[in-house]
Image (cartoon, rainbow, N blue to C red):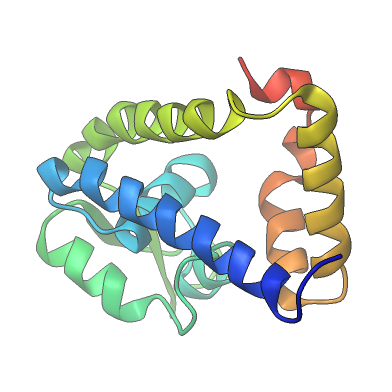
Length: 160
């Protein structure tokens, strides 16, 4: 039987360990986890508006404008006139931002592989299903659906 609050602390501990590992791996690139997520979202979905970006990110609780401004100053992201609305701007990766993508994808795969090697396919499928159920009525669920529904895979596919 689970002790009171144990589930919450288990989730927080997994998150903390994942963030610690990710931050260590991102340090040589000079990026935070939130910056890396924004670069990867822009790689996959860009060019997009700031609002569209905010609808696709998980790491940043508030709006992404402060992080985007830092990435613009570092010349990793650029603002371009939005073709759909002349009053708006779209965000896109610069060539320097695009150059970081392969490293970020490799880091992502490496972190996942480390966690996945400890779980059987059945354990992984159960964990993913349980986490989706817990989040099913939350804003985070909606964001995850927008980001990953088209790429949903079997647990065994996650290992590749």
